[in-house]
Image 1: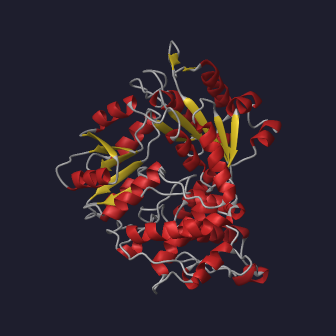
Image 2: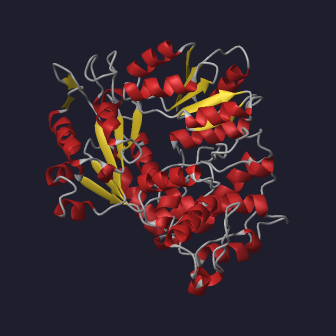
Image 3: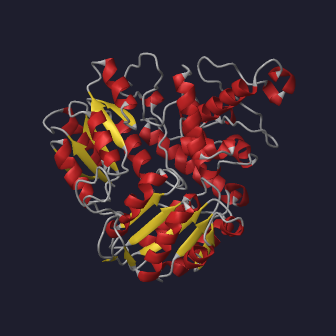
Length: 483
């Protein structure tokens, strides 16, 4: 992944950069906001910005918004002034990184920002068949539509296709169509020329140009506005793009992979997705099966995540007991591999014996052989055990909805995408509700690696101890992790 650091590298911020490099990141540096913007205009492959609070996080965020550059900003500060974290988050920073940096927290933030994963963990014949089909089409140039529920590992499959393709030496650029506002998505894809809109003070290249010679993944493409779909279709047909405000088309050589967690054909029939674009993307289709259809992967993935999070948290590796595996196998896994990942992270932290026993496996939905477990965020009432309706009488629908959302978010360790999947709502709807809850004074679980933000005073998160390290968030991927 690519990281741009804004600020002086002489002190703790330089140490954060060195830790990022040790985790495999490629670094760029700018001393000032102006220099940073110049780099971001010319390289759309930057995944995350680390910005010293002394530079002015709010000014950086506003400048990025003015130029329609959608890249997450992580504020970095010593943490001696609690107001730094408050201001940074309210000014638009995605996270706050206390300095001097904690290695595990750096790793968590980078993984959450990039969503990268490097290895497939496959044991079940159903998933193995999907991987074989992916490898069969990898060498071709055709577009591939990758379908499946959220959390099944669609982006992991896309990266696997790229690594097995003739374009493996070129860039792999991913764009989450659901995570970027519609007003920014067109510029993110195609770039813009100076003067194209108010705030466009210089030319900026987009994801298509950044992926030239390689692969462009359009993640959750069903979330793209129909009007923008027409421009995307032209780019695929003509192999050229038009920057916003551009006078001439720009040739691009890009292979397109797209993912969706919806039935795109049904979206076509209801008018939410263009039929011609659907057929252009669906030259080859892959369906990534949900975890409940590939039970043979559960034990292997559980062991993989147990070893991974033992290492991340500085704990000795422990095997998963037979009783714990039986408990995992009986669960329906609505959140798929991403839910299993969070469950195993929690189990690694809760386990006390030589093995990870069944009592460390906390699940939130009833299934044969499992018990429902609910955890209420601080300050919230506990959910009625067993789903008893009588326990809800006397409470408003808004109160019940708030508690359900906040408890689900606590279960997912702050992972917004996973929580939205479990709740059956869009990520945008979830974010809007969380913003309202925070404004009302509720304790909203932060994203992985971030400090808790409420309208009250907020102290920056101290460096994590092994028992407090948060889980990385991998967006739509999550089938495997970078080792």
